[in-house]
Image (cartoon, rainbow, N blue to C red):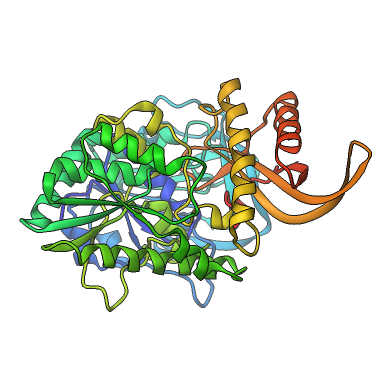
Length: 511
């Protein structure tokens, strides 16, 4: 097991993954493990520090999550965040009570004592609170190092034991200097060096793939999106001609996507195999309206198509996928008690009948890190900058039944919307933009005629890693152009709406 400078114990917070990403941005590699990880496995990672994440439970609840208490006897620096703070206080003899009301939102952090964990960060900074319980009495050996208007114990520490705890969440975007505070914990409290970057990650993954694969062959699913393109490029560098890259046209692609994918790989000298399975996918999706069923059908069909292609080649023992950390977290609780949001077609392993071993070199990194890795591997910026596209494709952007006429309607609307964003320079400034066919009809009037046609929803969001997102504040005149062009140029659409919900509570995709 490799050395991991900072180990994050996951107690179920929706923000846990951001802790790891913020540390990595500071050049300190970190990994998230379940809250009940065995001490032996923690020590095997030779950590220099441990972070206890937040979580939705109360430390006094019957089903509260508790770590192996031996972590407090390892002599390692520890940082507890929210729920982690309450666990620390409870263990060392302090008291935790239910707050009179849930505190949620921005607060001002006032320093009460100098501390290395606050080094070079400003007094009075904005931090983000999100908690129901709070510390009522300090444990022996701890002192207050920060307060807020509603939290007299906003930050506490036992400096001699190098144990720190925050009521606020330094990892989230709204905490003004939270990234610096996390970096301070790693650098000044844990004595970690900033040596981790995408260059070192690429070398590490290439070596890992070479050791795992040996002289065997790897079948790699390619969609043309950022994730699978980065995986294919990484594998091509690691194992060369042992890579069998396969692009499946599932009939759920964006306009001209197949041609663009084939051209891109041809320009890099990678021999791409294209399989047209569009009829198979659309036939299996016929009459299916439930989003989860759609995703599972698409995932199972992908696997079957790859299996059929693999049988045409000798020596294939591995299947490579562009699974990301966000996919894993939203699909299954592999790292702890985090809640399942939705299944992803490329998460959860392979069916029992399939003998491939999975290779997922991106499984522990985030989307923004994948883009950096792609640049490190020499992929063109315009490809690396492409907006995310879901594995199930347009099937989850057509509400209800998926069929060829509706898909074509959606493609036309989507192309217009993207054309306008590119023309106005807004495409590069947003995280993801797409259209959704709602399959909701309404009355309209075009010329002197009454219409009863479909509605297109435009969804444009800003984000960093996809774990959270806010709707993009697109200028009204740009939205007007998008709406006017879609209605005028796409027969069957007479209404365009703009989605102004953020994640959470909504997800980015509609299904």
